[in-house]
Image 1: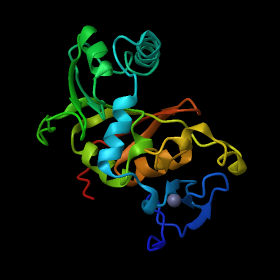
Image 2: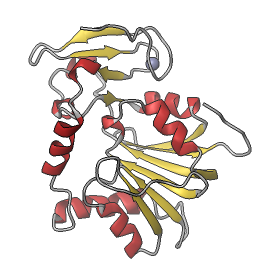
Image 3: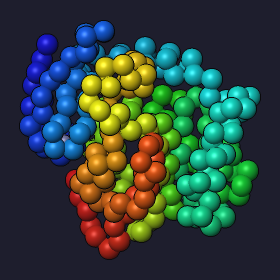
Length: 225
Ligand SMILES: [Zn+2]
C-alpha cells in the first residue's frame, strides 16, 4: 500500500492511518480538522462508481426521496434566494430531482454531474447559490472542488452542503452505515467543513450540527488556489 499522503488534504496537519476490523479498509484520520479519508487504494474504478450511482433510486417516482428534498429546500434554500435566482445543482446524479423541484418553484437551475451530464459550468456564469446534496462524501479532492465552485458564485452568495457528519465518538466510525458505501471516500463534521470553507474563500453561516452547513463567498477578495 502506498502511504505517500503524509498530510491532511484539508488542513495540512500530519494525519495517521488506521484500518477497520470488519472490512480491513485503511483510512487517514486528521487530528487537526477531524477529516477522515479512505485510502486511495480502496477508491473504486470510475466504471464501478457509475454503476453504483445507477443503483440509487433517487427519482421523481420515489416519493420518500422527493419529500426529503422538499424539506431540505424549505429549510435551507427558500429564505436565502429570491425567485428566478440562478442555482447550480452540483453532483446531481443520473436524474436531477433537486433541479426539477427548484425549477418548479421558479428558480433557474443548472445541473452538473461528472458522470451523467454533458453540461459544463461556464466559469463566467455566476450563480446565486450552489448546492451539494450528498456529494461531499464522494469527492476525491474536496479542496479543488470547493475552490472551483468559489469562482462560480457571486460575491456574498451561498453554498449549501449536505453530507452526514461523522459520529461524535471515533470508535463509532467502524460500524457507521454511512462509510459502507464504496463510493464514500471523504468524511466530515462541521469543523472539517468550516476548515475547508475557510481555506477555499468562504465564510461560515450556519450548521444544523448533523448533516448540513451553509457557507457564503467572501465578498471583495480575489482568491486564487
Ligand atoms: Zn485536517
